[in-house]
Image (cartoon, rainbow, N blue to C red):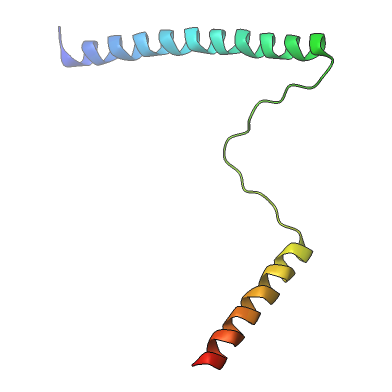
Length: 77
């Protein structure tokens, strides 16, 4: 068996495994959504990645606190 055919065979096996996992994941998601309908509540799936957003008011409060800390530190020097 040549190395090319070995690689092609491995790729084919990995694609088959990927398809199987995708089917299982789809079934799990269907079950999760089904539970949400039965319980009457909303079931959320955790999102991956992304950043939390901070309001302008929150950023301003943090900036004021930082300036206050630095002013205190400079006064002590």
